[in-house]
View 1 (cartoon, rainbow, N blue to C red):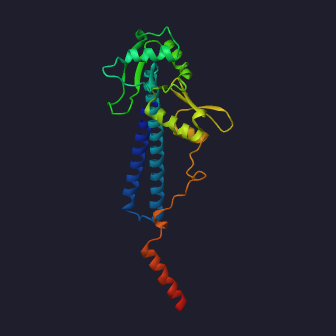
View 2: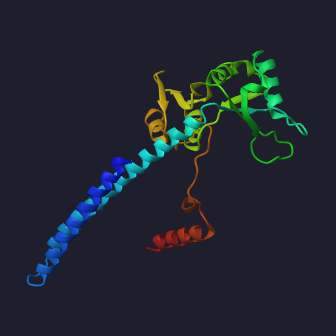
Length: 250
């Protein structure tokens, strides 16, 4: 925040200095003719200043957004999501979670008291099971539950971390570009395996682009999209025929 305040102060001083100098030149222009070259030079300087200012502001906004994302993710450190647990009428979600963890994860020491709070996410929809969000009281218990999730394989129940919106978008993009087996999350961070087999931690789509760029080219077996202008219509076909007839007459 201090760097942003300093940067805005410097931009403000630079802007006023440039504007004062420009006004002085305008006053002098009343006594001397203004040339196109001088106006072009002034415009180029002003455009360069505005471009640099906007780039600096964008960098500072991205830095602030990343700081806020880190703070928000730290608050979600002990929260997990449980997917695929069938809903029941007047259910006790805490008991459901404890039952799944004890039976499927084989953590017999886990009890309802280890849960700080829990609830279903979203509105109830017919024929759709809502995930359960639950927050644990201890980071140690949270890690023990999280690192036992491999035992849920083929059970119909899955577990995930409660990621922030930016990190969730990065994770979905990583799974699409690198594959499900080469992208995962740990402690709220997204990890991917690059083409060389090196593990990378990514926090933004820009960082993911450097490792696994998104490709707009169609995959093998996919049809290429045709631009609307490229699709022949009756009017364009008629115009083409008229042009051919005119060319033959010549």
